[in-house]
Image (cartoon, rainbow over all chains, first blue to last red; front, side, top):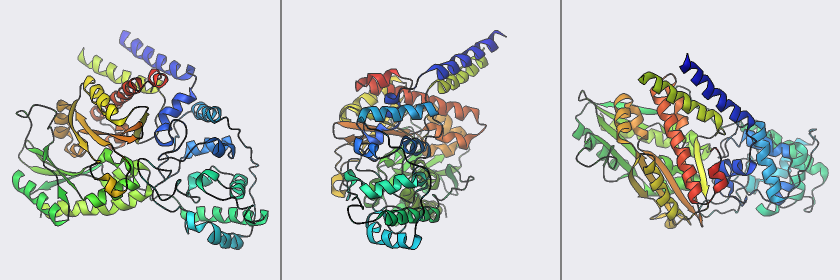
Length: 348
Length: 164
């Protein structure tokens, strides 16, 4: 009885802490936003969050952008954050930049779709791409690397963007441009109100056509476990031969426990064969700089207590989803097949 | 009794989750107002103070400039506890693909970004497996605590004093 009361007390204390705590926007921003947008909003993996940018958008747009993220474009959806937490982040960004929210009429615009398509082709495709999904690799500006654009042109067809932005905010941005990201203002370039309305209508259409990131089969396993018909040493040798055949360079083997315990106590019947193709690796890091958290590529070979030998590989189809980066998902779909071919060859 | 202690530990972990802000992402990331080389040193210390061993540190920036990177520091820190690795590779061999744990430290000028896969991401693959879920909760809480240490070391006092 006493034990049950103790448990209840722990939960009530925790819940009351949650209920009473006033969210601190600065702390929340540092925790959830600064890694990508930097402390002062200069942008990194994420877009800059400057006064100029924030002055042009509504608080509703920011709220929805935080809630919905940008599916497939790195920015995660913070669906579990409370409304108070999201609002605290927005209030902090406003205070930090001394920016003032614009308010836009939520009513949709109407326009000539065909005219919008022609204007999009003429003015927008070179940066935002044929399908409005953005040109270039990744998103945001740099994370310790060069980019051909200061700010990667946004995916205007992204569902997170289109579900956050009102037609009139989009109209305003097209009209005045985005100075910091080199997007020109098209009113100055001669487009009329009707022209811009047509563009907005066409961008909405692109969003409907774009759909979202490809869904993953819920039955996909976290990792693959493959039994080897060979003994431990032969399996290790087979994996290395298969990797060399697939043009991968193998690193020195590491025992799974290596470095975690003294060298005499390490289980030497559990080994990770680590491998890499450097040109591919750095290409991938350009697409997803956080990739190091799952690298290097490896096949782990375990001799089980019963003597059977198994090969373990991460399921890259699953792993690639953790980054919310469609480019990586596409690339690692191929890599996953390569992994499986290596395992197949080693266990033939 | 031992089972009571176990249940209490589990409930406390849950309570700690409830009392802190919820992280939505599969990745845990932290920006530090600290140079990356220093961040790696503090990270190693904090990891060890949390009872983990550093398995090794991989330097990934050797040839990065040749591939257009500006980074001068990109480190992957591998860490773990041997008893955990042994238990997991025995009971859940498929999870050997994800141990030891890995955290990256990337230089961004005078600042650094630390990132790791959120262990809670694995929960969905172990529905009903209490042992693994408690393991992921422990890792998650330890990582949060390591982040607090790093924030303190970087002088980000307000962040460190909050419930991360």
